[in-house]
Length: 124
Picture 1 (cartoon, rainbow, N blue to C red):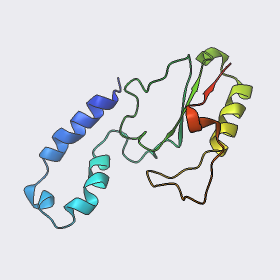
Picture 2: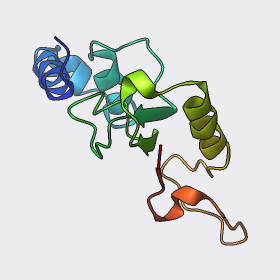
Picture 3: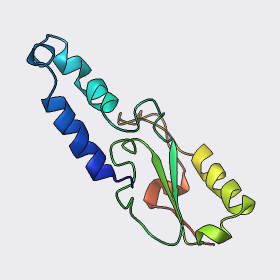
Picture 4: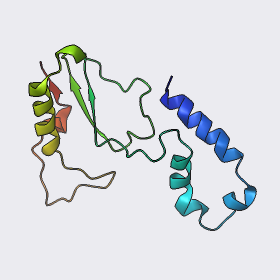
């Protein structure tokens, strides 16, 4: 039974068990995030570009907490059984209008007219 918090705690425990030589190396600061990611149960699986949350909920609910850091979050009121091709097309259209910066600052010369700028929520 997957849980994002449990995955992070387990990775932290495994990190503590690594040889001290590795943690004392000069590259520790540069490689620490990559190393930590390698200790997660999702290692080798690409981080999601977009997470679609159905059912009117506006939270991640302990789902891929580490991996979702730069994911676009799309919330829709439709319940999962009612989420059809039309709903997916709307989500993909919304995603295609996003300005992905991955934690960087938006260039002051670029303007973004995306529905998500003010917490867009799709209405079914």
